[in-house]
Structures are given as C-alpha cells and as structure tokens.
Amino acid sequence: MAYIELKNVSKSYGTGKDRVEILSNINLKIEEGEFIAIVGFSGSGKTTLIKLIAGLEFPDEGEVLYKGEPVTGPSHERGLIFQNYSLLPWLTVRNNVGMAVKERFKSWAKDKLKKRVEDYVGMVGLSHAINKLPKALSGGMRQRVSVTRALSMSPDVILMDEPLSALDALTRGTLQDEILSIWNKDKKTALLITNDVDEGIYMADRIIPLRPGPNATLGPEFAVELQRPRVKTELNSNDTFKKLRNSITNYLIQIGEERSKGLSKEYNLPDIKPVLRTKVFQGTRV
Image (cartoon, rainbow, N blue to C red):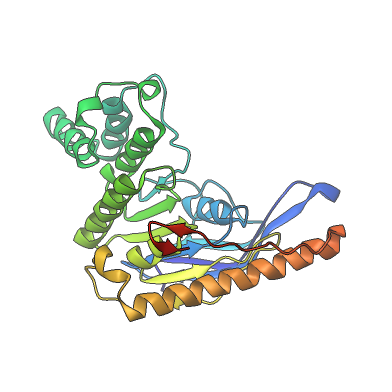
C-alpha cells in the first residue's frame, strides 16, 4: 500500500460553458520516506494537485488516499508550505510559529514549546526578528517564517508549493539544505512543487513532470540516481546530473512546444519564432 496515492483524479473549476478541467486522470503513488518533485510550467495545475493531497480541495472524479484512507480535509500530519506566505498579519514571527507548534503539541509545557519555536526560527536565521510583525519583514523573510512554521510541526508529510521561489539564491540554498536535513533525519515523506529542474534534482528521489493544462496529466518519471548527501558544488561536473538535467529540460521544452502549437491552432495565432542571441558575460558566452 502506497503512503499517498492518487487514483484517476480529475479536477475542474467553474460550471457550464465556463468549466475548465485543470487536472485529468492523475495517477500517482508515493511511498513512505520518499522525496518526490513535480516540475512544470506556471499555470499547469501544480498548486491544484498539492491542494488535493493537503485536503484543501477535493477531486471531481477519482480519489486521494493517505495511508490507505480517503483524504477528507486538512491535517497536521500533512504540513503544507504555501507559496504566498499565509501569515497572520497581527501576530509576530514568534506567535505565527508558536500557534502552529502549540496546536501540534498540545500536551507540551510552555518552556518546551517556547524552545521549539526559538530553535526553528533560529534555524532560518530570523532570531533577530522573532518579535516583529509580518509587515516589518521583507518578502523573503516572510517566506522563511512560512517554511519554519510548517517544519516546526514535524508533519509526517511535507508538502511544498514552490516555497523557495521568492528567496535570494543564498537563502534558497540554505533552506533547501535545512529541509533535506529534516527530511533525512526522520525520513519524512516529501512532495515538492517546483519549476526549477536543478532544485528538483538536488532534493528529490524522483522527478515527475506535469504536462500543461487544461486537462493536465503527469508525464514520465525520472529517477534521480545520485547518492546522498548531494553536494551542490560538485553537481555541475557530475555526468549523471548533467544527463538527467538535459533529459528533463528537453522533455519540458518538447511539451511546451506542443502546447504552443495547440494554442496557436485554437486561437489562430501567428507562428512567430523567437530570435536567439548570445552575449558575453564575464568572458563566458551565454
């Protein structure tokens, strides 16, 4: 029995002539302890997919199972890291995280709750801002609060909806490593939604593209056969990494071109091809 399973799942929005089928016949199995990355274009239905697993949306057809039972709503067992922060603006960083920790560990003493909040806030480098409101934080800092709030609850499943896309490269890399450290320590089950192929390869065991919607379906899976722990600085010279990156990127380019041709026919758009130019950047042609 798979830890998480989607069986023939379809999801649409709207009614009548305005009805749009976002996902169509999605089948997916995730085993306990696996780290899966779903990659795809913006607007392809990735967020809808993760909301179905989180219990924030429900399929029109098919079923979503967690530990063999239908998902009927949200649960602290499935922690979701949102793309858009979702912080309570009237609560400080401490209280945004603390509210989640208190709800998850109801029997804990105040001192133990306080320490966990401070440890996790410190983990993302925000100890200096722990008593600030979200309005006093930058966008990247707010996202770091959102990440640590979900991780501090120690969910059995970590669901991530492009949680690092708004962060600078250094902070993004640090949080990737923190998420991997937590995942590896307890062997949590993790699902990452991303449009960054390199991020998916660095973090995941399997990468599965989502073909663009409407009627989005899952494409072929790509196994990431790289030993853990993975070292970022060594990946670019790793032949397995380069081959996998090229395979996934070429597949995404292919389905992107197919979608563009389909839209051109549907809306009678002109066939315009981009002109590619190269430039020299610090002595390297790009």
